[in-house]
Length: 193
Image (cartoon, rainbow, N blue to C red; front, side, top):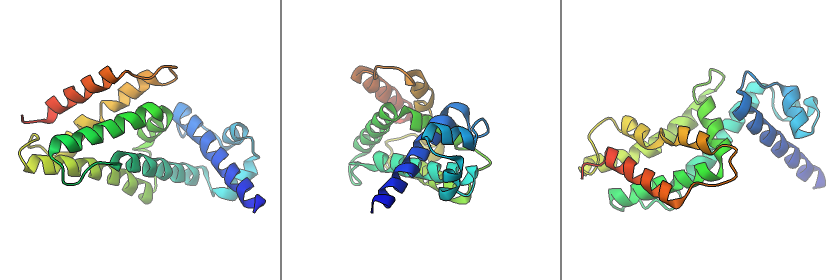
């Protein structure tokens, strides 16, 4: 059993190093030897877990997206009114971004990478589909603007990208007042009421 925990520890160290480097230097700007150095493992160890750098970035992309999606969905009531669903969604996204800036930057730096495989693209589509699904239900009720739900979802999700960059590397977290103001501004942009 100690071998398994040691192996899991190495794989987690590789993921952490890859996340750090891919989110700072991009996929093309990062090499396997650099990841190995930051992870404190040999380059050959990386190839025990991943067949290539592409395999590593795809597995990391899916892993981080799965985590983000589960945070987005946490506590969002299926049958609640549109405002309540939006509030939970926005709050979940905001909390995740503020607590996982590097991960959020990684997801959004690599979302259109030519190296992403079909499974990675499907994971990314699932995230957008979840947000768009809430938007679509709200639009059908007449609570949200009647545009393609994916465009409206961009109004909800999109601003979080440059905002996260402002907090990257900062020692402080955004205030609750800022979060509330951004939530209100986003709601006004998509609401019909």
